Each structure stands twice: as C-alpha cells, then as structure tokens.
Image (cartoon, rainbow, N blue to C red; front, side, top):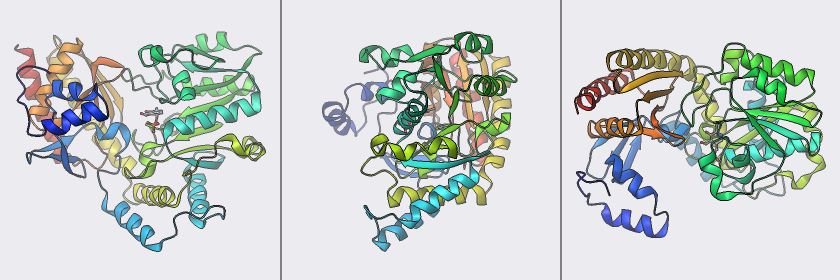
Length: 416
Ligand SMILES: Cc1ncc(COP(=O)(O)O)c(C=O)c1O
C-alpha cells in the first residue's frame, strides 16, 4: 500500500476484493489514490462513495464511447427486457438479423457478414479460426506491441511479452514483426503465410499511429500474396478516432474486421467479427467454429443497434475529432513547456497517449490528476505512458477542466 494515501472507508470492500477476486488490483488502485468504490457513473463522470465526482479519462479502456449509463441504451434495454423475448434458441430472432444488417450497412466497403459474440477476445479468436478455415495451418503475421485480448488465440496474437510470459506455450503458427515497418512485413511473407492481423493504431504500450501509407501497403501485400487481412478495431471502432472506424482514415478495407467494446453501448458485453461474404461461405461448414451459449443474445443485439443509431444520430465521430484535436494540442503545449517530465503526446480523436520521462513521473502525474478529480492511469503495456481516452460524450467544458488539471499536475510534478 502506498504511503501518504489515506485509507478510505471502502477498505473492507477492497480487502474482500483482494481475497475473493484479485489480490493484485487493489494495490494498483491504492498506488493511484483510487481506493474508492464507484457508486454512480453518468456521461463522462464517475462518483465515489465519498461523493467525489471525477471526470473519467479512462472510459473503461474504450468501453464507454457513448458515456456511462447512456439513457438511450438503458431505455432500449429496459424495453427489450419487458418484451420478454430473450432466449429464442433454437429459433432465430429478428433482432439478431437486424443487428447484422446494420453492421453490414456501417462497415466499410463490402464487409457484409457478421457473427456476434460476447467479447472482443472471443471475436479475435473467431477471426483467427476463420483465417485458419481458409488457409489451413498457415502462419498469421502479427505486430510487436499489439494487443488483441486475453483468450489463448488473442493472447498469442498479442505482441506484449509481459502479458504472455506466464502462459507459455501459446498457440503455434504466429510470427510478429515491428508495427509500421512494411519492409519487415514483406520479408516475413512466405508460401507458409495465410493472414495478417493488426490494429490500425496501436495503443496498449503507448500510442503508435501507422506511418503514412502503411495500412494501404499492407492491404496491397495481402492482395498480391492472397493473404487475409484482419483489422482489430475493438478499441478504435465506433467513433473513437474521429471516424466510425479508424481504417476509414486510411481508405483501407480489411477482409475481416473485429469489433467489440462500445458496440455493447457500455452496458452489454459484445464483440463481433465481420467479413467479406466470400470468406463467410465456409463459416457455416463448421458449426462449432465459434458457437457460444450467449452469443448474439437479444440484449447484446438491442444494445448494439441502439449504440450504432445513437453514434450516427449525434454524429459522435465528428464531435470526437474536434475534441481530440483540442486535447492533443493542449498536451503538446505542455510537452514543450515541461521537457523534464514529458516526452511526447500523440493520438487520433479521443485516443491519446502522453509519454512521460519515466514510470515514476507517469504515476505521480496520475496521482495528481486523480487528486484534482480527473481519472487518468498509465498504460498497462508501458507504465511511462499516460492514456487519455474519455467517453466521447465528454463536454468541451470538461475537456477544459482536464487540461487545467493537467497544467496544475505538471507544475506540481515538475517542481518535485
Ligand atoms: C485492440 C483490442 N483488441 C482486443 C481486446 C480484447 O477485448 P475484450 O477485453 O472485450 O476481450 C481489447 C481490449 O482492451 C483491445 O483493446
């Protein structure tokens, strides 16, 4: 337990959490001064049991693009529950069909067929299976520093060694290359290669935007070598980068798009794998491919449809692009002003990383921000980077408050 941080009245719950759920998470929150229990969350704010309200700049790590407890999603889910039409298996349900139709409508290019699952990791595993179904045991090329989730397939594909170390041996048939290095990717392609799986923007070990032309060149290589291009937009999707999907910034359409997080409106666990129809034809050949008891359940589909309609109606992506520019500009000003503690700031839309000079400085800045009522934490894959990814519904006034708090936190940490 970090010294200097007052024990909260929620300590009993924290002790129970440590005993019955996870012993490693409470110390992480304690270090940040976040040893509190959330009692309310709305829009871009979280209120703790002492009545203190924070601006949330973690956004559930990409879950809450539509804000906490978005009233429209709650209303549609409540209505759905009252309909009492939840588990229709073995019959098909209309809402699942409507959800798939809507995904086909908003997905880029000719991505048309989808399977709704319960999480992003599960959807990644499903995408890997779809690639294997078409390319047999051929290799899947992935990127170093990537993150695709914690199930075995997704973890194998991930490029952060510290996440994987304890679980060896992972799956065979994967190789990884540096993200953004098109020559390295080209060199790694052989007759044994079947697919490429990457994120359009990396964010787990710091923010890494693709160099100019990179994604287009990956697309071209995949076409030339008959490889399946899989893009993981679990985090970057649904408006977060200022477009509905990040691949739209680069005019690239993958063969398989993987979705999750905000697809469930921040309320229902959901993931989806979306593919071109020629790839999907073989999906039905393997019923066991990714069948899962709750996959595509009525609540998940209701949440998904409502979430997509909300994003479109309020034009969340465009709004997010503007807010993101304003935040990034301010952070870059502070990087210039405080070079002893800050190294760089980068991002797109409301997916921003601030690289500090050390893990200690990142932690101190996070603690100062939390004291000032803004929740901000270091990236799991790189503890010197602070991730800033608030719900996209954050107001301009709240953004100004985040910037003011950051200015004050920099003054404090720079002077210590
Ligand atoms: C890019 C990316 N892929 C996959 C996942 C895994 O999704 P889930 O946590 O829903 O299993 C995440 C989660 O953070 C992610 O950011």
